[in-house]
Length: 247
Length: 260
Image (cartoon, rainbow over all chains, first blue to last red; front, side, top):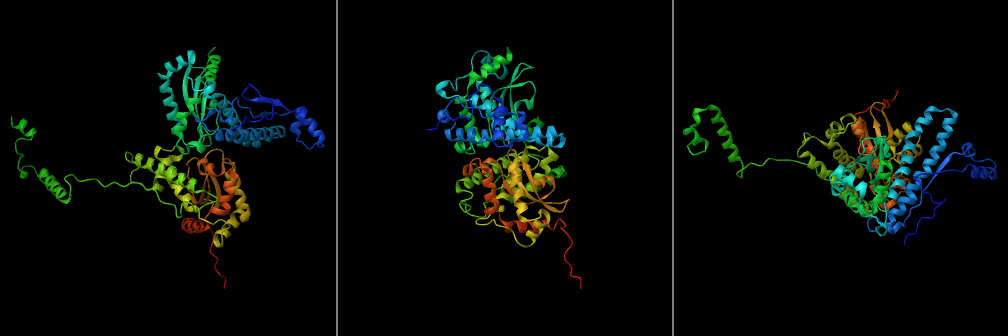
């Protein structure tokens, strides 16, 4: 069976684990005789792969353990690693005053940083059935869904339709528009985070519709993946985010 | 009374000679009725079909498994064809050739609904034909000369191809195109379904970088997939044929005319 991924660093509660490795890297730099780049000595913040709170196989049969392991250990880890690398390069470019290099790095930062942000939310959006995954939302979020979409079923249908219709790679979100105080269903392309669709949008639930998220199990039938993922949806987390945002 | 009765079709219609236009219409109608076997003439419609790859589905093993080709061609490509036909039933693009559809549907960067299906049908067909079992290696003759002229060396081209493929963020395609304006070969990446045809260039060879093309065989290892394609699958024979055709549209340089 699949084991929980052994974290490189300690488990953190926040979506983005921000930690400076200045002291550690400085020691390493001393050991390697100053071979580390300048940015390490200056203490560039790096991000770490967040741990899952459930086993890779705990979401079966909705999402297979093989997909969860690959998705977390390969894809998300790659986003984190590339994001850290890009930030290091950005730091160097800013220090040198190289404007064109700074601009050129933006797409890589948006892609990998967005990938890290989105996937960190995604792992929290999922929960094994035994721990409450799939239970529909109650109270404030439940009423808001009824008000803005008519019914819970209507919301599910809308999200599934938009997710299936998305061409290429991207995400489909249940978002809260903080300004308008309304719920919305949004899609973003590639790894663009939800804020690229509106600065006031708070992600409550995100579903990854990149093919790597479902291909090994569902092959080309994305609608099946979308209809099954609701069985492991963590509405409790969405409800908490909603209540914090509307408090 | 008479008007009411004729409206119900009870009374006989007036004689043909009474209204010349009606006489003409009636004779045409009679011709049509006699021409058709069935009582009602059926309209002839034509739609797009799915072309089979020029090799057996397991011929690209071990670099592209039979399972992948079966799914990729049989499901993904087929779905694009079916989706396109469904759209064309009620679209102004009915009757267009695929190339016309792509160029018109691209709409200068604001693709119309038919564009995605049409472009993907074309791109995938181009892709299957860009590959050949037990091929790869390097090209010969004129194509090699052109690559060496435009990239420096075949190794440079290979590196650039792999690098471009890996730097594509998201879904898309990587192409070897013949650029019309610059009159040279170039490696370009396009996102999702965008085709160099729509951008005005002549495609020579492509590689599908959507995850469905390699996920079953290589999981997340895109580098291995691209390397295997360029080393073992790409059909330089097809590339040569396409270059020959492309040269009819792009002047690649003065021919070598002997001095004496």
